[in-house]
Image 1 (cartoon, rainbow, N blue to C red):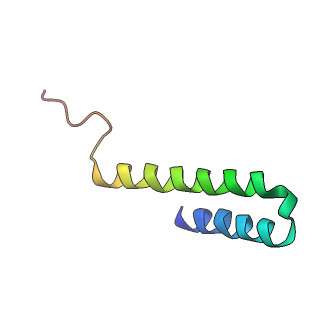
Image 2 (image 1 turned 180 degrees about the vertical axis):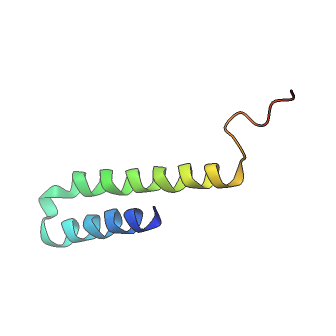
Length: 55
């Protein structure tokens, strides 16, 4: 999954370098990769979204 984030960021950088008119797309690729990082971090540090229920 980290590789996918790096690829999205690499594509965003290439878009900025070679196609500056696609700046908005590059920005959205960056934002999506940030959300993927946050989602993976939350999934890694917590055992579940709502915690462990007391059964």
